[in-house]
Length: 381
Image 1 (cartoon, rainbow, N blue to C red):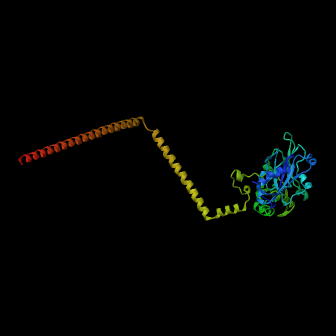
Image 2: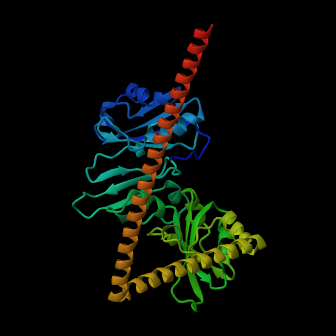
Image 3: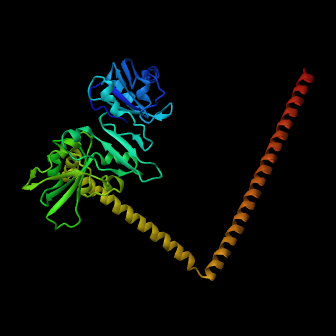
């Protein structure tokens, strides 16, 4: 995701197709907000024939429109991928200053995207054909204005994201071995925000050491290069461009070496406070106890299982035959019990039926006797 590095409301659009018109560019970027002004250089067809791509500038009314427009980088428009960056100055440049950002009419030069924090004046391009040996060239006019060393060329096969990391990284050398990374971080954080820092040495007994420092923003590089030769703890500090990015084993492999950790002060302080606090010690003890108990349970269960298996495997054939006989006798006993219960149930049913029939016969005899007595009384009367 792109990052706002200035309060400017102007964006620069590089690598625009030579067939694109001003109204087409305005209609494309009007989707992100209301536009105050649009310029597309060059205007004349004569100058357009001398370049490979145009450059445009768009000024919005709101700053949030700029944030949305920066996400258009690498979007194919007509026949070329766009490169959108934010302009630090809140004004549109004239055609003379903007022409240096147009892609030259050279098949060996291809414009590449920079980083989200790169100024619009920094140009990143690939020089050479894909089949031939090519290299990536980054041009920063601020380095030229300050008489600072330019960016070294990088291999053309390198990924663009890695190139962006390398261009934000410097290599510091001639450091005393007693200087810790925390001291170096505190000193360099006055120049710009540091994302990663890592010591670079092989032998611990060496008196002179080095370190790689990756800044969060590219504009910090000219500032840190300007302190080259500064006396730092009795030694002149040597600052140079890095040609490789920092390997980050702390985030990739999960290592906990302090020299390989990303330097975030809040994280380092909170981690140290957590380690020193009694609550952290208690929680660690609880975790260790839980681990030991789980291990012991696992061992006891595995032992019981192994004992059961061994007891089953060590049974003799005589015992097996006895167990079979017992199971057969038990099954025969169960069958006899079931048959007895069925016979008993049938007997109960038969006795119930007999009692019912007897009660019915008794009731019929009583009814007949009562009727006969009634008839005798009527005859007497």
